[in-house]
Length: 559
Image (cartoon, rainbow, N blue to C red):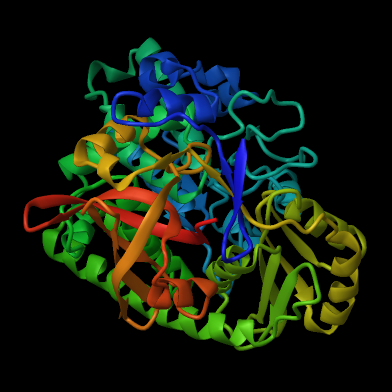
């Protein structure tokens, strides 16, 4: 494998020296990812396991069936991100379709924090409570529920170090006693599996004699949405969820999603549409106001209301973007470059935006990043994003055991926690000890080196047979060699648009996002020499005309 060092100090690992074209690109991409051609045939039929293959799923399904038969009302308690919103909606939609009463609540990020809380358990004590995308670490709350004879079912996918007592059932692929087959599922995928199990049992019990059975594939739009936005691996069942869910989204069956998409100035709907438009807008409610806005958008049946809610989320997301830019600028000024991690604190930062800021800085500096603000009670609230080789959820757990962190949890790459602000100096000492890794340059695994003449629409369409791209199936990265930048311009004070050309008259439009203030800025604006350009290919549609664009990620000089 050849390697190249870029102007930014990054390393490019070239995976193949084979000359690629539209005839062999699919085979090369599959080989680079370690997949067989069967990867291309991820269908619901050949990917779906029996719902009961998950520990406690049968318990959950039977208890839900019992509540349906006895007409006990349901209360779904969800998280405030896209996965939690989607999981909540799927249950609301299913219960509505079969004529069963169901209410929901999602905690306010600013006032209630993440996960289950005792006040909501007490409020819905006469209901069968289903916690979605949360609950796996709610030991105190589940103990309270059991002590007070309140039944709670947990359907979650967050990391579990132990199994708390008190729940009727805990369905989570990360249970210590669960197998590894479906650890990549998000909560909405598990909720869909649960609904499939309930639906099957209802059929077996002749429930649908007088009730029209729901079309469960119609729920896959929200499963796809959550799967992409929660950044879980797009392989196996997840790949099937997204492929089929995108088809449902394109049909625009959900009124709320239809109105939200109407605010976008592009017609195509793909995984990128979800990741960079639908997801951020739905998340904006939970970040700056309340996630109820997102659930209401998805569940409304009134066109005027859908339009109003979509616009509200759209405007909230614009406000979020402005806050994010300001917070990133402030956090950058606090970075100690000598440390192998980033930890920045401002009591006045918005708790709903710190996670995005942490992600931005982690990407820019390739270091584990922790951003801390205060809630209205003066308690420190932190959001963490990490890099390969540093499991931030384990570090949070150690911080709790050490008495520095009050509570928290998450995944290997993303976590959150609370702590008293007076313990932030202690936190720094703890992080210096615990965050240990070999500092390495950022690496890009390059699928192939290509020429401008190869990059036709047919080439990109062939490449997209492996789509949707995302976590676990990254968008292909290519290097274009021996090109010059013939013109460049700055867009919105942070992006740079360029025209690439070679010695044979071939040209290609390229763009680098958020590159102002980085080493890329000088290379893209001022270089007159031949360069190697690393990035991703995409198809741009404008006025019903399609063209190939190159999303520039890095630049290297010709040897």
